[in-house]
Image (cartoon, rainbow, N blue to C red; front, side, top):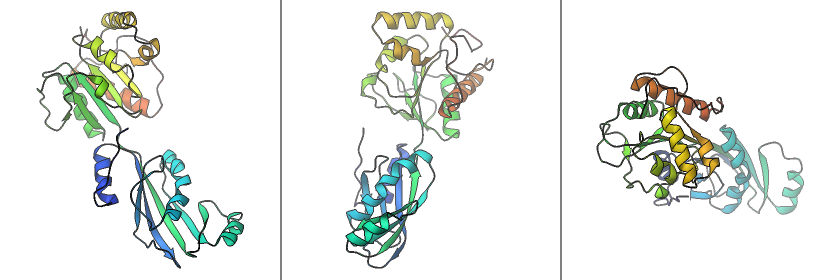
Length: 287
């Protein structure tokens, strides 16, 4: 997993980078303080989804460790909360902890102050990774346009530099896909149309992407899957491939095919669709 280092330990500076890279994080901000506390309203700490401090701080490890147990819950629900942190002497804190309300924690320390900390989760933008055949492709262009319009982070992997969409991030990896790191929130759409199907599918067989789709006709799917089995590609991976890619909406034009693909990705993302039978859902044979 890629790691990040903040410049001058500024949480907001790192927030911008994490957002651009589609990474999840949690920003904790002190909204109220009372008594003897180093942290004052406005102090910020940036956490990873696992609770690791990425930048900032509250002036000491006690308040930071106090909110850490809440991070996984907040990241899972996506709903921000306010945690009340009481910095008390050991004996007093132990007694009060037994009567603590929800989202209230007592920390054993000699500070004697109180903090209210706002935990604001950011789930990260899901990525749609399109692997193309190179050159101009209307399905590819339409899919990337729709993906960006819907708020996805888009990644285009092509064997050539030719691309008519200047807003798309182009990752030139020479099709050594083992170098490309993926996340469970990623969706991969293979639009190689027979020219690099086997190389690409073999290259992403260890991908963590939650969605993998292949644009192909039924005839080519059968051939590709048979060839993958002969190459020793695990059947578990082959079974994950949605082929032909897209929901069955009777798509004919490139734009309609792109809509069917983005619709299936959204349905998968929202857990509203089961894996469909292997049948042709596009209106023409794509090699």
